[in-house]
Image 1: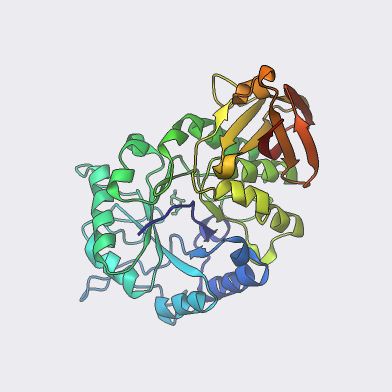
Image 2: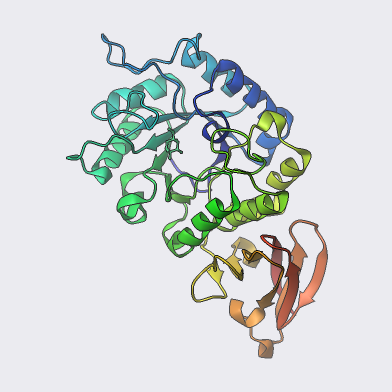
Length: 377
Ligand code: GLA
């Protein structure tokens, strides 16, 4: 199947961890529709780890949904999710056990892919815990890639080996549509900043068909839930979301969308940011700094878009205020050309007119600005 744009949706792990069940999933599905998230593009509802019984069925060898969490089986859940117009995602692991110690798919890849197809799954996140030492990681991802291709259903393949074994170099060839490229995110500014800094130079490997996945978003978690670690401010969530958009990263919400705040909802449904994220060309951004993103200072990054547009993001990772500048020469428009950028603020919609040579913006600590631009005289 073709996955030409970064997948968008929701995943249970960040907020719920092991505390998942049929009601949580159904209520989340309702919220995704009622709050306009589906309309904005968030279509996958993915159940992460901890959904099954601790042991496979003795006779069939299949993984079995935990009856206390999913008393009506997985098809009842999947049917409900589909009835809302959403797509349904499941989780397994390339090793013998999942990271939270439930059955993994090692040596059961084809049977499990068939089981997920029977559930009506449209997406599979595939983790990397409990890998037998003798097994080759890339080969395990190839196996599930083949099993999904053989299972008779279109299933988005979301690999999750945390960036190990230089994953970006071989995962596209294994059939994955997205691949986790770092360790787990937690709900803290430093966590997403370090992920963003570490992946900047690797985005050249990301693109249509197979996207670098810097992990589920923590936007609006505010220190609540399974990966809580103090939380972020609204300004920090704004910067996190904008970075994921500039990276053409999958946008998987991790907060409790049943209770999402109005400000976070406005952020994650911002049409301009989503247009930048979903741009069909999925080009990597380039930076005005040699080192890509600077972890404790301000940086400006540029991303060429289809329709001859350009997205510009100024980000301030420093702990104090900074002035960020957009040097037109740095994005390839010398002053002598007579051209500049016609800039529109992605957050406020303000039209800043045509800016030539350079443009400056004052940014608070951890804040950012994003502009959708056209080249103009
Ligand atoms: C790993 C993954 C996480 C999550 C947990 C579940 O840590 O990286 O995203 O799926 O496992 O146990």
